[in-house]
Image (cartoon, rainbow, N blue to C red; front, side, top):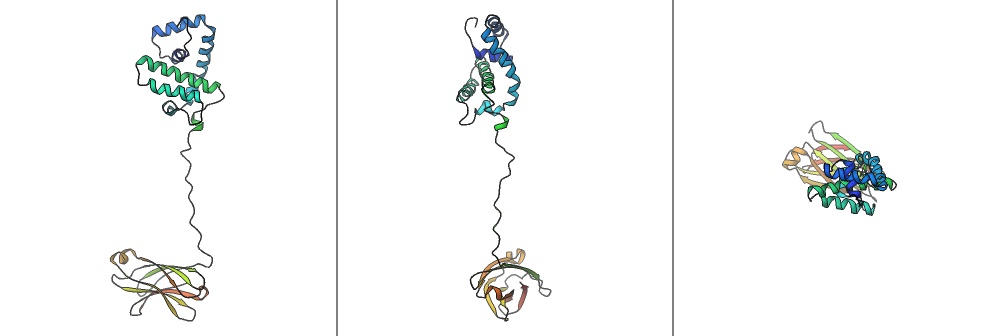
Length: 233
């Protein structure tokens, strides 16, 4: 140590991880080596900056495309962690030298400023707006207690219908109709109310050959043509 320059030991010396014998050898060398004294002063100045390097930097190294010297240095630090105590101290010295190299080389290649932004809110795509001319309606029949919410979407001379129907007894056979201005009805679908449908309601998609501008209502009737619920639109 009194004749060779060992920057790794200088880093370990600055961090205070050398034993008394090794620290004494470093101090003897510093007394006669201006070059190592200068490096030691730089490492001491950078010691505080180690608080700005996250532990992940020592474990994983800098990001891809970062400083190659720093990558190699930190890779060696990782390998030193499985060695004996002295080799681990050398690794700590390498870590200190890596910090100094990054800071003196023009800014941190790793650090909190370059960590991924884990607080970024994931962007979601809003649902598409319904087509122009879409009609919505909802109603509850005062006599049967059945409820229905409908959406009527225009097409080229006809309409698409989505209906959510609740409050109809299990095993009831139902028909969905689109009602036109002239009072005529076109069937848009039919279903049998299940146990789940009685409890949670039924959602049905259908279509009817009624011009969009002629639609005035959507209604549900039994197969015996008894009205269950009507929704004006």
